[in-house]
Image (spheres, rainbow, N blue to C red):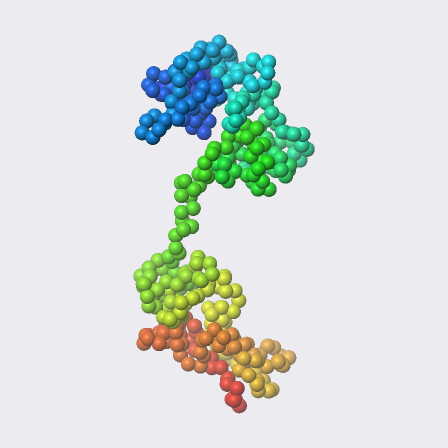
Length: 389
């Protein structure tokens, strides 16, 4: 007795009268249909050309004519499967004059093809349709889905896209992709062709279910619809943690107005209570408020440690323009300070006084001072005749 029959007899589940298998993968066998006395698989009935009758809601989903099934089973018991050698093969090759028959589960093992459209024809290994002559895959060509090699010649287990003619994949890989994508999203993984590609794959026996993709049914991308709820500042000052926020005030969570994937509490990024828009460093690029303040604080600390800026030979005419001539001994710290003062003034931040981000809080100057640097460097005015030391 073959493994197929032995597995069926040892199982407590009902056995399909056409293929002799109990249960089975729904992607291969379809739904299991039965009324207690007779059990069969949906696709076994389909490829045995036994009509299915859809029932209205509330009753058995599908039904079949028991007399027709009994007659077909008697015919199948007289035929031997060309793959496993057992009797009961109800699927016959559609080629005229060919008497080969096989079970549905044996089709893949015997390199047979069953077409899941139109007349639901089936073909044995000799008469199965083959793809048009194309160049053999180059050495070490990989499947675009699993990235494993596909071999150096076309075969039953390898297929090529008929549109771009250079994208190869394993039959099992493209079949699983079709089951996941459905008719709505199934297309060539490389060139994205759908019309020619779907027609060719259906002819070659790939089952493409008529439904929407599975990733829309099992909510795979549900997390993408959730709003970002975390403070991503380098140092979060909120005592309750990064994932907590108030509805308003200094601890309100503000999201990046460009990507909405980065957030910050107002106080953690020195934002005033009236600020409604904010951009993270990745979206704003160079010259953002946070990076500019950090550079200004670094230069202020360096000047306090004895790196005093050199004196410019000429007074600048405008507070946003630095000296154009620098000493040969090195770059002028004054010019860097003036340039940063210009960038910061554009962002609306005042220097030379305490930070004005939190006018309503008494402890705001100390906190902003800790964030933005120990001291703010005063910006030289246009009418000043002395240079900062």
